[in-house]
Image 1 (cartoon, helix red, strand yellow):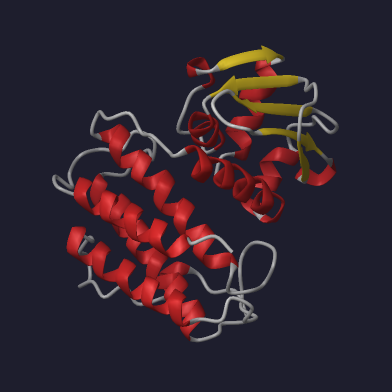
Image 2 (spheres, helix red, strand yellow):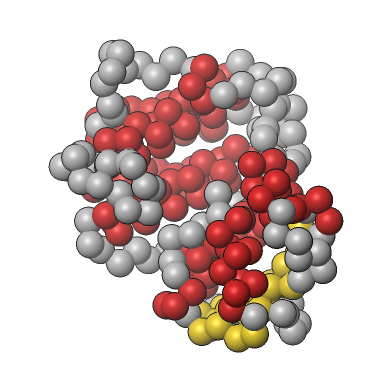
Length: 245
């Protein structure tokens, strides 16, 4: 099992370090400032902690979990750091095989640390973009992130509905990393579901580029214009717009 705890600790510290001027707008999260971004991430950590500590078995929304913030207040770097520390303490004390509610597949506690890592990675990238920096994601982390995204995507009802409305059943999209050993082909199935497989294949649309950029592309944080696209660009644009979390 991967050591997600140390990566979560690192990413939480990186995001906290970016939480200076919380009034800065976050273009990749329209309508948010860094204050909203930090509050969202910290609340997500508290949500995961609550689910694991209480062995929650049925759906619970993050907004139903206490935030430890006064009414109307936003989170800051210290609040984010405190929530991340509590999350890490809980993860280390939890049996990964414990049955627990998840919004994705698996239904075990082991689902949560991987999800929390990539929640941090993507939102750290949001903060960096807001501050004019160019996000970088280590190749091994990005490969795992792409597969985590594809693993969860068929279970994200808020995504499968718009995917179903595209009317592109059977269409394929191929992702090809140029700086790591990573290739994936995604097939759009009926009812908005997807299947995916590792390895080289020809897709109706294909994208080549650094694997960190491919991860950010899937999340709508990197434009296809920054990578090399082959095949049906219109299909790619429509699919990415519908699929981004």
